[in-house]
Figure (cartoon, protein in one colour):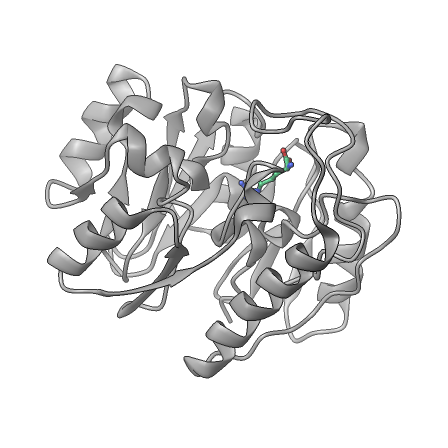
Length: 261
Ligand code: ARG
C-alpha cells in the first residue's frame, strides 16, 4: 500500500475524476490508515511504499505490478501522468525475494489482472479495452506461466478489471456482467457458473473493488448491497469508509497490491 500523502484529483483519466471537486487530504489519510489497520488486524502483513510528490495517483498501489508465485510482472502505465509510478514499484520489488520482470507492453498491474490459484490449476483473468493492452495479456502468460483469459471491458465507468470483477477465494469470484462484452460475459459464465453476480449499483458503489482473504471481504462502506451479497454467499463483509479515494476512481482493491509469494 502507499499512503495518499500527495493524493489530489488534478487531471482526469477516468470518468470518476472531477478536477473541480476538492479532495480532503486529512480525511483521505485517515481513511487510508483505517484500511491499512483493518488489513493488519485481520492478520495480514502490509508493506508500505513511500508516496512521491507529483504522483497523486500513487495511492492506487494495485496498478504497480501483478505477482504470481514469486514472479512479479511489472507495470507500464497508459497515461504519462502515472508513468513514473512504475519505477517506484520496481524499486520496491528489487529488494525482495521475487523475480521481477520488466514489461514491454502497457499494463496496469492488478488493476487489470486477477488470479485464482484454485481454478483450473491456476488461472489469470485479464481485462482490456481502456488501459491494459491485449499484448500484455500474452506477455503476462509467458512470464507467469499460467493461462490468461482475456476479457473485454466495455463501460468507461469500469475502466479497470478490478472495478468490475473480484476474486472472493481461491476459485470463486464476483462480477458485474454488463461491464463486459457479450462474448466475455459468456466466457465468464462458462468458467464460473457459480459466481456471485453484482448489479450496476454495486459496481457504482465500488463494491467490486474489494480485497478478500477467502473469508473476510473488505469493501467500500457505501456498497451495502454488495456486502449483503457476499454475506449471503458465506463470506464476512468488512466495510471501510473510502469516500476520498472514490474521487479518483478507486477504492479498496485499487489501494492494495497483493504479494503472491
Ligand atoms: N485515478 C486512477 C487512474 O485512473 C485510479 C486508479 C484506480 N486503480 C485501480 N486499480 N482500479 O488511473
